[in-house]
Image (cartoon, rainbow, N blue to C red; front, side, top):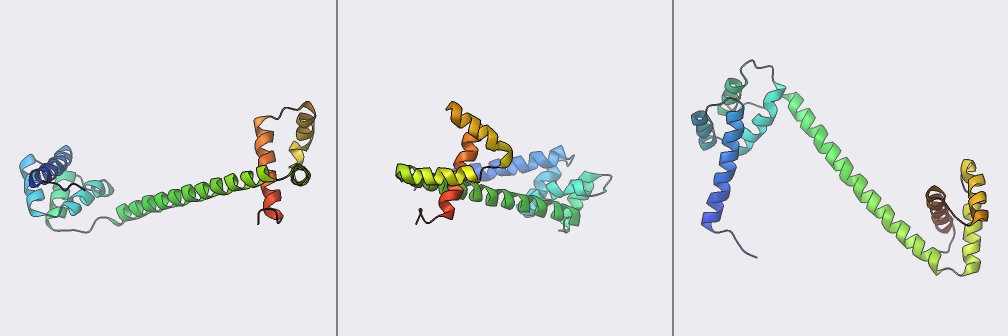
Length: 173
């Protein structure tokens, strides 16, 4: 593992500092004041207030921002609620992704189980899958099976019904 040299750290800090100055300047804070704020205040607080300033009713956002940072004010509640809501959404999305990945793994496993079955056992699984096929698709399934060509929707539904049949039996143990 390669560690950063002092020069690389200075460049990184300098770049972060410049980005923060630019953000403050875009909010109409003078460059001199922005540099002073960064020099004398916590960077995390400045970042937070740059995001939170839009949740205030301030007429002069730049002046409000400078005073809030210098006096270490708490960010508005509305900003905190919004940020927590975003974080909860991110956590929810991560959970859903993990669940989806887990489901895909289970599907792969059940598909392998189906492929490993004898033709007689597959026939039993297929009978169970066909019996539990959703009613509105049952006639379409029968027609497509007779024709020997399954549409994508029927194929996917059949695979899902097979997996349910395997899970419901003692085959996968």
